Image (cartoon, rainbow, N blue to C red):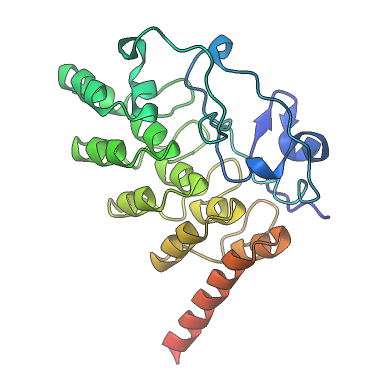
Length: 247
């Protein structure tokens, strides 16, 4: 199976795409890992058994790691109380009451970034916390901020397949085709993770089908290479509709 040149994860030893045959599994395709706690509080995650499609699609890399909650792994050691969580942890866990309490005391924290450059809005978007995203936007959170590797709230929501959040962010006129330093756009991330509804929403809102990943793959190329037939059909239908509208 050929490598698409797209990679979704990055390790200390380099892009996972370079080691996909040993360390990447199909289960990782539709999640994004973000560590909420210090490393010693993060549970051990066993290596998954690689599958035939590991190499294809391992090339859309993302600087963040995948979330334990999305992988259905539980955090074995938690902080004593929710009061000890940072504002970013509160946003990621949807602890809206406590988060709002912190922001009422100091509203300048709303767009404060962590060491990766992630804001509360980015964390909430990455974890699919729809109501938290809604509240943060209402409180004035800036959806246009980019993290250190140009990650955006939209790209994180698209990677997770959180269509409601994607639409919410697009209502704020964020760049639908924002290209990050990891080689992807929101549409490419949604296609890579096989999020059909998210792909539909992005296309309906005008996402560019011709934008290529670093490897030269378009969203359609990627869908075909990964065997995501429903996504491929959605893209084909969208192209057909575009041609019909021109006639």
